[in-house]
Picture (cartoon, rainbow, N blue to C red):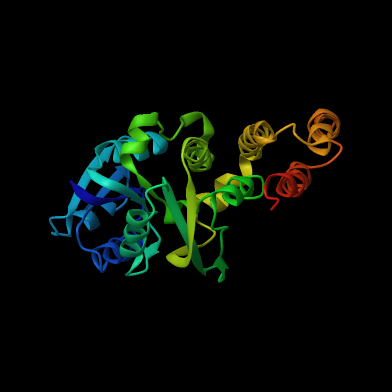
Length: 277
């Protein structure tokens, strides 16, 4: 079995695709396959892909259906682990080695991510919580795993029939990692693993602001899941579950406050209840 499959969905990525592919081929960890799944590109992306002759590269051409294209790449992956990368980002040279070693040393972990350094329009490091419990909670504020740093056991996905779901649109990755977290355990390595390009032309910049209801739907699913993790052993927890939270949710349904305020507040409440020493 190949240790690692890197999956890169490609859609009209001609401007930066060459840099992205080179960052994978230049990894210090060399025993991998790279699957480039094209999502019906209409620019010169195909010519750029075909200009590479490295035998580790596999090219799959798909019709334009982004989530279906991602699932196709995961389905065809031969690796023990699947590493995700976007077509305009770059891996640091040691990324695959770091994540492979971490997962081999931590068999209880199902998937892992890390930090990203933004460049371009924004320049800062995005840090993520390291341990599973805080990662799960973090979905109420942003997300569990930075998808361009994602690294997951393929056999686990097969056993639990987990894939990216079409009805979650451009937040399908958040839903994907939530499903992995419900059935397994996640971790984030406190190191920069991916260089994340930011610009006004990104799909995330243009499309995610148009889908707030989908993100709110996922966060509500997470909230309901986390509430089930609370025990009734203490009167405080019981009161919070049966009285305080239902009343708060009624106020949310009446648009008394925004989703960001509601889920941010619930993050603080549940953080205190679930992450106590």
